[in-house]
Image (cartoon, rainbow, N blue to C red; front, side, top):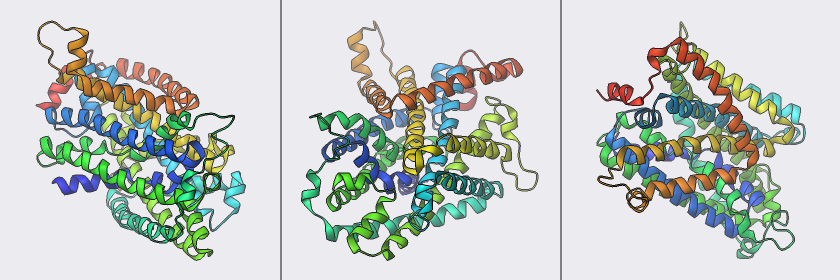
Length: 451
């Protein structure tokens, strides 16, 4: 891939369900001014994190991304934990996307918005349909992803053109009373807004993970990542600015399918709301299918290398797809949906995306630390000042990522910690079952990859 291909991949993998729910998510969690600040901070934070990905990919232009970097810098145990979290982010992301799709399906079938059991059943059916698409082969899943990626552009254009006709600057000064009570400062909602906006940028790291198929990776990965983040930021800010100008914050926070409900509010008709919902459902479903495709291939690779149990590398006898990995992802994502179905669609969606975001941030932190360990040649005596000076950018990225984890909330962090503990027996089993694949230092394994 050249630069344009890299940018297209970054934009396509980043714009998912977050765009179609961000107006409601931010109105429910933050205020207009705090949301804008959160977007700027998230965009800047992702760019400086992207520099670490770019620096590492220049040294090791291999597909695999974080796993390759961490194994080289921090050893196999750290690589396993990062892989474990990376795997955890896959089915949780897909679960969030499916729940988001069902929320827009609720425009046609309102019962899904009030009956949690009905919503749960539909979510599970749609999730397993994605699994079946991917089991039947990469070609069918890829073709479906291409179609839905093209479709993704249509609702954005329709939303901007129609909603802009009802824009009122007065709505930009409103706040959601539930978020600013008893004289509390609206700036206190920035961490919550940061966690929501961070979800919107998830996907830019796939560029570095595909370094092995990028032309001139030393130049194109850094340029492509930064340009795709900037483009996505412009799209998001434009959408949220228009949404904030159409509805006041309290009304916007109460929507379940914000794009559709905003258009219905603007036109007074359900027609555009239905049209918008159809396009968005296809877009979200395609994003979910593509995410599952990538997650299953990742799981297959980890199983093949015996970092995960070899059962993850089992292929379907007819379609030659990683069937066991896909089924395990389906089971785990289904359990996550079931565990949160009592929250309703909006509550389940927000919780799941925060858990997925927290897991991905852990992988980003490991990448930033690997950047410091591998690419910062101190030379001579190492002092705190020289350390900070040499590692200023990745250290700044590290601080940003810690703040982003704080914004996801204690419940998300607790679930992430529990999942970390769940992985320890798996690592212990793999260490004793396949000691040759678990080395004390990642240096030897990484050197083999490079050669």
